[in-house]
Image 1 (tube, one colour):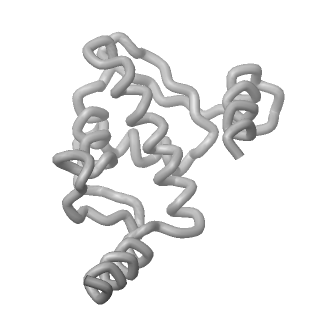
Image 2 (image 1 turned 90 degrees about the vertical axis):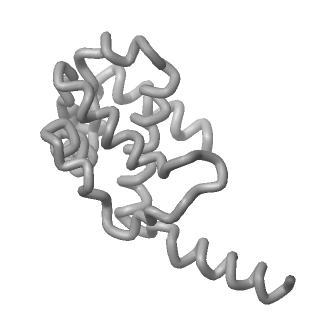
Length: 125
């Protein structure tokens, strides 16, 4: 049992994105959470503001049909909590939302919505 647990722990460390990929995956997971919370109303969303140009690039690629593209280090291994990885689900959903305009907002520039999002994130730290 100990060796199985150690192997599982090593695998989770290896499969967990680090550095810039970790931040990118977190940004994209936040979009997935938003779409999950909106449920059937997600199709009514027409504008999404983000301060991560890399995350915007992934969302736009997925909207264009390149749903196989994933951030470096993101594992496609089966998940315990869901049938498919979050970003796989997000890629598919983004492809189904062609009306959604994903726009860049400069971070820390005083944009009220971006500042509010940063304040929420700081509260979690």
